[in-house]
Image (cartoon, rainbow, N blue to C red; front, side, top):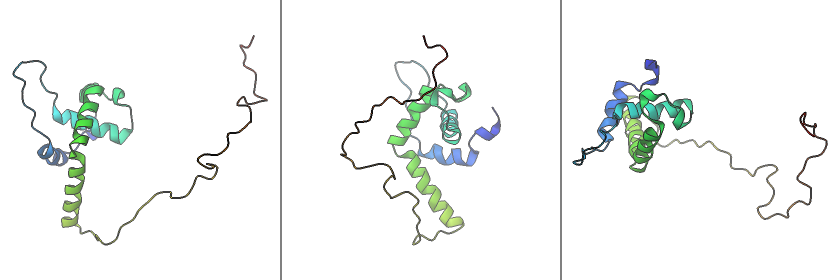
Length: 136
């Protein structure tokens, strides 16, 4: 796996400060996963859009990476990282906090119909379809 799929060291240092400290279990068991690899795996999924189970194993097991993602999301770690990054950007480049933009569709779907509309009496089966080759 190339270096381009790893998060930059600067981003990792910012994220690491926000992560909770995980205590070592007194009962033994498996050691905790490497949090840097977990973070790399999370950002890999976010960048590529692949499924959690399809991430390369060098980031850790997909289920483990996903569990950390859920925990960190619930703890608000990504939101805090986003807010701090915006403030840092504002300090470096400046942001016009009075100007905002919203992108989204706020219209009704063209063929959506009413919410509680009358159900169609049309048969569900489509006609004039090509016959399957293996049809007996």
